[in-house]
Image (cartoon, rainbow, N blue to C red; front, side):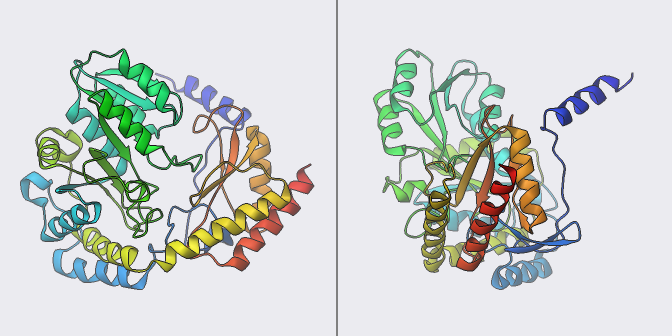
Amino acid sequence: MSFDSLSEELQQRKQQSLYRQRRTLETPQQPMVSVDGREYLAFCSNDYLGLANHPDVIHSFQKAADKYGVGGGASHLVNGHSQAHHELEEALAEFTGRPRALLFSTGYMANIGAVNALLDKQDAVFQDRLNHASLLDAGLLCGARFQRYLHNDPESLNTRLSRSEARRKLVVTDGVFSMDGDVADLPSLASVCRDHNAWLMVDDAHGFGCLGKQGGGCAEYFAMGSNSPEVLVGTLGKGFGTAGAFVAGSEELIETLIQHARTYIYTTSMPPAVAAATLTSLRILREENWRREKLEALIQQFREGCDDLGLDLMDSPTPIQPIVIGESDKAIQISQGLEREGIFISAIRPPTVPQGSARLRVTLSAAHTEAQVERLLGTLEKVIKEQA
């Protein structure tokens, strides 16, 4: 069978300025990187606290690799649940104020596993329209009746829940929305869930480390109790600077996931050295509040600078600072113009974001300096004027 039809579709994506290409990073994640043989100042990493290349985290990884080797060797339920994994789960449970936490190999697997372990065709799942793809896929795969409510709109959610007679009702939202950078109204969503006897599941991938006095994410940011949200998901490859993910919640929730979450049961555990390194990054994340304070100052500096330039920023208090451009071809042109000036920022285009809202997704890190942010602002002004 010929692949001609695939070739036609790929060519069409190129013509629509939607074709994606990988770039090769040749250095650690840090503000100054080498990509495809050239040095850039990068503003497109999820390493929000600058921990991915922290010497203490690296040392912990190396020490644990000497002790445990490299691979996990088996699934958690066979022979792959190491002491390092167990210690990290206990630390994450304490960090989140939940009885238990369970490690997954990726955030995508955590979301797919949790939703599918909890729901089936007797149930209903309600998702924010701007949720991450992993959450949407989880809802579509679980067999439950799938509904989407208006973005960050508790009233829209309330209307949909009022009409449901499902056995179980699960409301799913991002904590920080990855493409817009805004924060979910968790207190209001939790209140609506209580009114309708629904569970609330929050994927706080981009909140952990950045929000809350000790980096506890959206739940700490809103001073929510240890019982809400009922299902709390976090990833370790962003603010923590390592890899993997976890779900935190009640004893019953975690035991249910161990028994039924296929993405947990049927995969090899993450390398134990990654778990050990994450224990160190968790300690740094909690103790070094200056990282969040510096990050907040850089966000304010960038937003004020963009306002002076008349750039259209989205309403985001987080390290995710999208500059909405509109059309995909124009976003690519500006991204390429920045690249020629030594600034590396990817253009985000449909279907990742809605049609007509292509953007430059600027992400800031505590590892950046004020001078680097000023360089970004000056370069943006130059390139955008050239493109006008």
